[in-house]
Amino acid sequence: MRPFRRGPSPIVGDYSDYSDAKIDLISRFSSGLIKSKFKVAYCSYCERVITTGLAVEHIQPKKGKYSHPMLIGRWNNFLLACVNCNSSKGSKGVFFDYLLFPDRDNTFKAFVYKADGKIYINKSNNGVMQSLAINTLRLTGLDKIPKETTDENSNLIAQDRINQRMEAWGTAEILLSIYLKDKHNKDIREMIAMQMVTTGYFSVWMTVFAEHNEMKKIFIDSISGTRLSGCFDINNNSCIHPHDNPDRLDTGRFSIYK
Ligand SMILES: [Zn+2]
Image 1 (cartoon, protein in one colour):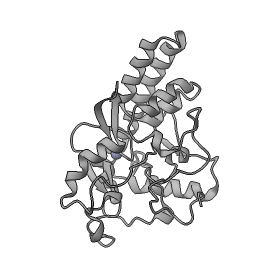
Image 2 (cartoon, rainbow, N blue to C red; image 1 turned 90 degrees about the horizontal axis):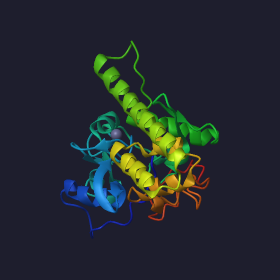
Image 3 (cartoon, helix red, strand yellow; image 1 turned 30 degrees about the vertical axis):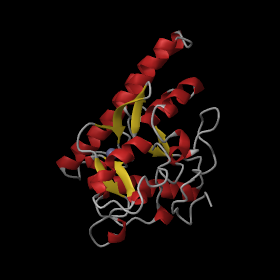
């Protein structure tokens, strides 16, 4: 899950209509850039490219038993979500003590992406961190795999999400083989960056190109807000320290980061 910095609210006070925040949210932490020009936006949770139906997602739900009506227009309570992540999360209660969020935690270090399209928990983290990561996948439904016992629609969604990550992995591997033939070719680097931006699934690309810092640097700098998270070191590897959280957002008290 790509970590990022949201930055301070672009407006004084709250948004009277939260959908007005969409442009600011995209520009701050969800813009896929090619030669500094905006191309696409991504879901804050699953990293997919969203062409239509990108919703302003309320971290603390706006409806239901766990609703936080005071936060409906609050900048710090917004992320961007695709229809699948949005509906999986729904109006479930959000407790920062038990979850990880990309604007306040080092969510890149929390998960491992593999060629099978599934998202795994990073076992090199301590037990507490692993539990928080499991809870986070559960909240967004990113832990789901198709099963006979679940209904057909949720199986289709789960399979679609897995397939998309597998496709991104396959594309990234093909481009890695091209890159290895001519690492210093600027045109090839640009072509790969363009493909990463338009395909989405940042974490998949970072994993496939794990040994190639110069490409990871380009990936990190190709999506707004990512470098500013402070979650990547000068060699473009994941930091072992927490998200810098320069916006001083609430984080869980059980987090390993404290
Ligand atoms: Zn999503």
